[in-house]
Image (tube, rainbow, N blue to C red; front, side, top):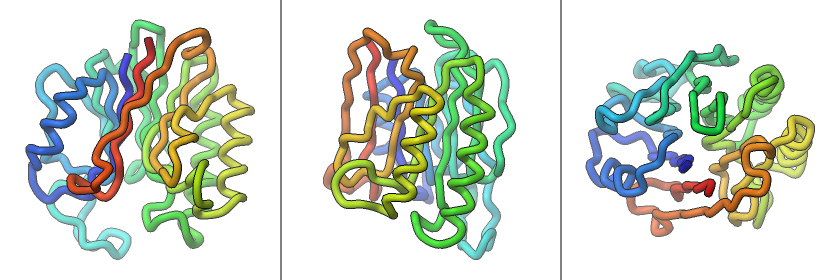
Length: 219
């Protein structure tokens, strides 16, 4: 099973180069952030998404079709779960070969890892994590605006709060060792126990967007 996350930097058009890369990797679960409803991944994928953003929403000049987070999957989406903010975070209960998996796609801090908005998003999403991780396998993926290796961003406090939550909820951040990286995939430890996990990254030259893309493969 492949799970992919990528912040695609608010595309203003269909952007075939991004779509071609996603098709090439062929993940079963894809979480795109800073995305747009113009991005289409074909009939084999179903999706749930945060609300479309109107121009001027929260002081940002959004273009037609922009939304913050979309979860695409080849698996059956059983239901959509409520999150603290339907413009920023989206959660789908997905039927995978490993069992039911709650996938929480998100951005923490839509203006980056600074200011009161980031702090508020973090605290509210920590509550979401606790509420949505009960009884089912859980995946958190997206732009967390926090580094876990390399330079500290935005703070030790933010990193420590997330690490404490992951430990409490028996989750593992599979991307924590990628230096200076804010996009992450976090999974229930029980899902990857005694399994081989491979990590693939791309877009290191930042030509397709201003973030690298990340895919994990669970073998």
